[in-house]
Image 1 (cartoon, rainbow, N blue to C red):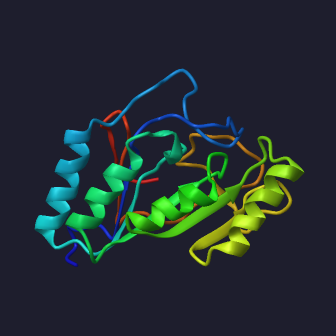
Image 2 (tube, helix red, strand yellow):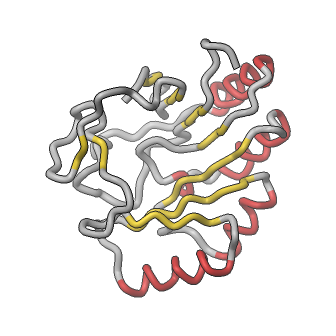
Length: 187
């Protein structure tokens, strides 16, 4: 890669989430859907660049709320077969059938996050069973007191006691396109 090509591209296909975590800067009063033409245009441009990095259909949303997700990821895999497709999810809508479908369209890793708002024992047990059954799932515990990584301040957008200030931007080679069509320059 040259200096002008990102290593990671995150495409938020919609702005819907099933949770309202206190540390997430997602505006609760907005609802956007990234149109399919724009999504495919970005994927086509990545193909022209010879992109082989990570593609993820998320930002501050729950990607499994988008009914078009499997079709969009299938297109991504067809156009960028050497890229890694990583899906980040809170697991609210994740089932064994959904994991099988995701694998079928080229998803190589599902990052499953446990969050504060709310994670019941039953929900946690279901996600742990999925984690044990599928070797493509990575479980990240984001609950207070159990976090495996400190939270970011998201460039100062959120005030939360357990955030870590950044002295450099590790996301400089990440391109983030929000469902509104806005391109986020960095964290």
